View 1 (cartoon, rainbow, N blue to C red):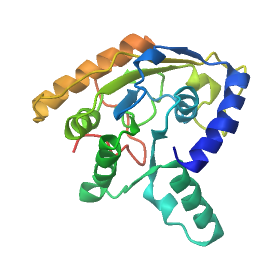
View 2: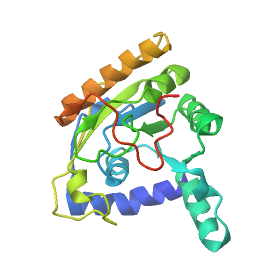
View 3: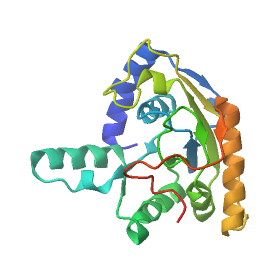
Length: 229
């Protein structure tokens, strides 16, 4: 586990557990060793904080590549922090550059790390669960690892879009893990990837109870790199 991530587990994680007392269900589905993809709904930037708090192992999140390339003292600090946390840089330019996230994630997964993906590609604007992008399924097949469905509940109330930090007492936080989905041996053509992604989103919906919307969420300025190619 990267040094700064370890420090966060010893400081930030206990603080969040005391302040918010998140409920965790299905933790037995989190593997003790080996690579896996966590694919969940995305309600708030706090999703990453609480997921990292309740999972005992290191989680590799994606971060914009600009944060690794900033100039001056601020840029150096940003690069130091993200590198120390084991973040995966993402090129936002699109095309081949955007696929660098996959290039970095595959060896991490094969090396036994855990990578977090949000199939909706952006935070839900209204609390509903939107159609998933096929990147998570494609990544799972390429790396030969299972996908663990994740359901986050209450994070949009604890830290709504625009809020700088989570607010204790604003909502009850629940994190639910589903049974791993093993797509090993499945074909990776567009139709098959779509079917696997729909299976995944169905499992996430069962965990969250969200209303499902069979269309993609309205795009933000910088969509997630794990969307359809």
